[in-house]
Structure formats: structure tokens, C-alpha cells
Image (cartoon, rainbow, N blue to C red; front, side, top):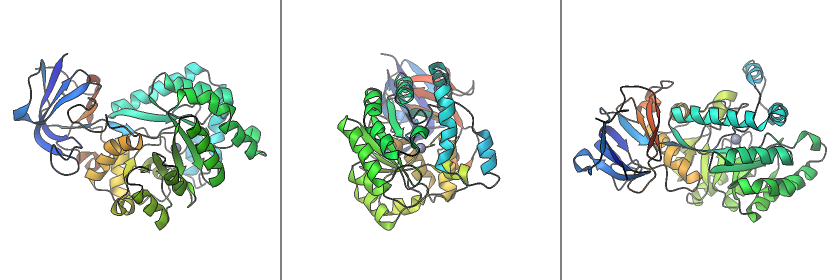
Length: 402
Ligand SMILES: [Zn+2]
């Protein structure tokens, strides 16, 4: 097995408090040794184990690869005009999803796959090494199943979201659509998915419908996650905690009882905040400070989708979370890496400690704080997935063994 040492790391974020300072387990003048697809050493440069190849990081920062635990990449079509109109003053409603449903249904599998791969590559260049994505723009048995199948051929974290909105054919029969989503559509999608999700919101699915959809998925072995409390207060968060969902996503409009329930779940249900969504819809941001102070586990994700949050950039979301949601740069970095891993119930990623998967990003900056300090600047300069260099933005940045 080939071992590669990355030495002269200015700041190494391990997310392991046993390895370094604070919750991020920060180590300065650090080294990392990659053996095959995993981390063999993370610590001071002086203690690095022997390696076949050596890469000089030039005092740059190295962080765990971002874990983007919420995206919607199985779609076709374009929503530029809708965004343009919304920026001219019209509010976003869930109905805009139907535009994408029309385009997705007429798209070939090859088109869906090419679009997915384009976005995966875009995310990778920005430091994301694990991502979850959802169905939800097909809304028929065949269209949901082929979306799930396309996703499963490229990703481990696939979510069945037949319950994104009620399909247009069931406009006057929402109960009939819930029967479809909990019956034959679920049967067709479950073999490709790990998760079941529902958009629990006014204009989409109410608490009782959401409960029926999630419990049906759980009976098929899927783990629940919930689009909760995005546009208004509602039953989503409480339902997520009650069903031990891995994540309650959005969490923009929370009561004190919601915050309390998330905190009391002890990290079992992660509060996943999606700042790109509020940014792109000019909506009020979720209050991360309130959740963190209460003791909830918080993740940040892009929610990358063509309607309400068309960013694939975790660095952008970190910058917004720090500027607008009351997070410190350290908290935001943790939420975008270890937090995302927690929201996907994974402990092999989101940290850089011996035994963890060698998923990491090098920044053209001395520390991770620059991700928030220098918004909009492409600081991710090299990315490794499972120990393999998969993206390098600059020739001079640590791409050749010395
Ligand atoms: Zn979403």
C-alpha cells in the first residue's frame, strides 16, 4: 500500500479534540499520512510516520472534505427566469417545483445523469467529498425510480423524496398521492435509497401525511430525514425528533419547544441549516446561535437545487452562516464537515484521524477561518477522496511529490 505524507500544514483541522486544540482538534505545523484510502497519521510534523511520497503543503490549511448532507440534483430544466422574477419582488412558494417536474419527466436518463455528474464535479472542486441527493422532481413511479437508480449508480447517500410536493395529476386528491408515495412508488425506489424524506410544509404535506410517509419508508428499512419548518412554524421538527430522524432540515422557524426537542435528542436528530436557501429567496435566516446555545447538533448544507438555492458551494454557505446566522468560523467549519457526517450517521468521514477515510481539502490560506473571512474567493486548491487526488486548482499547490 502506498503511503503519502502531507507535511508543513499550517493549520490542520482534525475534528478530533483528542488530537489537538478545541472542538476542531486544531494542530499547527502538522502532518498527515495517507495510506491507501484512509488516514494513518494526523499530528505534529515531527511525529509523521514514514511514507513513499511527500507533499509540502507550504503552510496551507488542510481540512476534512465537506459533507454536503442535503441536495436535489436529479432534475432537468432551468429556473433562471423564476429567480429573476423573485428578485423583482414575488415570494417563493413550493409550487415552483412543478416547473422542474415537467422538465425532469421529459428528460432522458442520460440527461439526468450528465446533470448529476456535472454538479458532483462542481462540488468536488469546492471541497465536497461526500454528498447526499434526493429524488423529488419525477413524482411518478417510473420517474422517481429512474432518478433514484441514476443517483445510486454514483452516490451512497440517496434519499427518496417522492413527497416533495403533490404530483400535478393528484392536485385534487392529495390522499391518493400519499397512497402512491407510501405504496408502489416506495416499493420502486426503496432498493436504491438509504433515506426517506418529506417536505412537511404548508402547500406540501401536513404532519399526519408526513408521519404516514416517513413510517412507511421506515417499514421498508429507510431512515427518515425531514424538510421541516422552512417557511413557517409547523409539526416537522417535532415529528423528526419523535421518529428519530437523522436530520431536521431548514429549521428556519422554530418554537422554543422545537429547539428544546432538537437539543434533547442529544445529536440523534441533527438540525441542518441551509443558508443558500434564505440567501436565494431573500428570506429570514435560521438562528444557528439559538440552536447551538441550547446544545443542538448543527450541520450546514447547500440544499443545491434549481429553485430555491442554486449554489453548490459549501465555502459560500460557511461564509453566510458566519455572517448572518451567528456561527463562529470554527462552528461553521465543524457543521460543514463533522456536522454533515452526523446528519448522515457516518463516522468514517468528516474528521481526519487515524482510521478515517482520507477525504480532505487543502486551502490556499493559512487557516480555515479564511473560508468566512474571504467570501467568494476560491480557496480550495486540492481535494483528495479516499486517498486519491481528485481535484487540483493550481499547479504549484502540492500536486507533485517532492
Ligand atoms: Zn431541500
